[in-house]
Length: 176
Length: 328
Image (cartoon, rainbow over all chains, first blue to last red; front, side, top):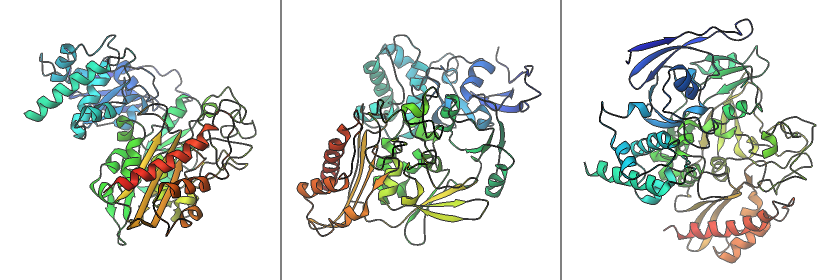
């Protein structure tokens, strides 16, 4: 069951030598999570390991693959290359926050419809990234979409179907 | 990643003061390069001063008709800023040629200037690198150096500067405003980054404790004939093998003013004003662009796997100017 807030306490084995844990409020998918974190915990690790939302994936952990893409205040970023402590109070949206109750986000349905994945590991990042791209409003053609999705690598090579899913939802959104 | 302490500051003076008392404190803004280097154990700060709350995000016109880019405006917000797109489209093009959309949403203008080289040996702590560990040697000179420099190198380092944005800033005669323990100062862009010489561990001339607050662009007439050409191993999301920022101001077909800066070829964005001056008053022809390319690359030196860059750069220059001419 979802709770309004959750708190995670961990013993600090290095408390004599390292900085104290800091209280960080992470707003993820509309819920506030009060976490006690050390400063070097990435936003990605906080989301996965401390909050337990494992939809966001750790691929390269160096900002090269895009598997960790989440939306922060509506903008897509690589959650592996930012510290959780830097995002205190920001509105974070992960793949788990896109559906409206039981109803998938249109892009989630389109990915299923177009068979836009094989192993599925890059998919949460692809979908969050595409929504960030829609928010930016700069992608108009298929060529634009390819360029503006280049930060998300699919090692299965499902790009053709990923692009088809994105283009379908893009035109639907524009016609609304 | 090694452990470190962390503090979030809200005032510029507080940011500068926050660095003192630590052996190796660093500012963090977007963090896209610094955190990567920390994960690789190449950067090991003991303290991070988070400057993201400083009021340095504005992009606004200056009194002289130029533009001031806040150090903390993101690369994405800068490239897509209405004033930048209209008055400095070369800069927009260059920024959008770099990184990925996610990274451009995080990376800041100030941080972009401090990007470190992507030399493989700099990143690999098992190898010798004078930039990472002064005096240890350069593994690239006799190693695999496909991505390395052909201009302004030294026997100690042949690393390249990785930024696209900085190549356009060099072409556009930007100035960098910094503040620090000894007050404010302005650094001309050509003096901002350094050549490796015998101190390749120093990328730039910013002093310890100094903070970039803004980048200033003088008024520019390069709104019609400009092109940023980036040649790389794949079509998108890769560092430049060679990049060219080309801009022309024409009177008929005669060159009234010309700018040429190169990326991917040196330890800093490469610009040679004497080459540009030689072509003012000349016709904007392919032959003249080739002659300009020969001139700016006259002293280029290859190290084996990167020797192809010399001819590649010349052809890229001709193509970039040819594209610039096509703009109506």
